[in-house]
Length: 303
Figure 1 (tube, rainbow, N blue to C red):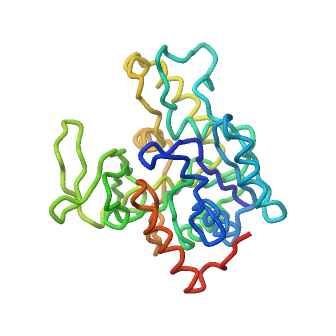
Figure 2 (cartoon, rainbow, N blue to C red; figure 1 turned 180 degrees about the vertical axis):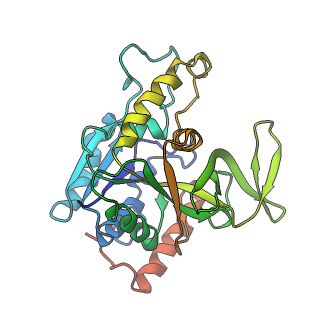
């Protein structure tokens, strides 16, 4: 069974200043996710599922989904604040979405096969999709608890225009993920890569430290674990009172690893990430895409 690509596209891109998922960066208005989907098709993925907000469904169908007809089956699912388990309600004053792992849960009813999760505003490059597609395709039928993550070197994932959020990882002796901690502020300071810890202090890490760019490989049992953990998350008074608390993918993955429920293979890749975290990143991304086209990696027109 061919794996599915689940694309997280529900965010507004507040730091970027607009709906960056629909920003045309290629020569014919291609978006970053167009290149991801093109690479995924090349890597053997058989279906794409987008997680979006209901309020821009029509624009998304017109500008995005229409491109892929005849190329790969595509579906939409919707993330909203009130997509909560029975017995829970949205706290008064909450406006922030519930986070990336909540977004994954929106795909439960349309995904029955191994799947890869990515952000729509990150340019992962072809090799990352190839190594993930190979891992998922080689899983035995009915496989459970055997997941994967494409690890990027943190020094290759920074923006020159501000801080970035990354899942900082460590590996065990078998090359599996040992821990992953979401760090929401990472940047290069005086030549060294540093993240801000819980006490507000800047902590240095090596340039080659593996980080998650939210490129994960899961089997459908991950939905069941996530449902249970999300109820626990909502049942925590601190999370409900904090109107900015989020249910992150690294939080869920780390829990499964620590409990010994699942293992997560850290997949090596030759790919170098780039993306558009800030508006000032845009031109550099356009230039890099143009260079890849000139090198023959991508055609001038994708779809």
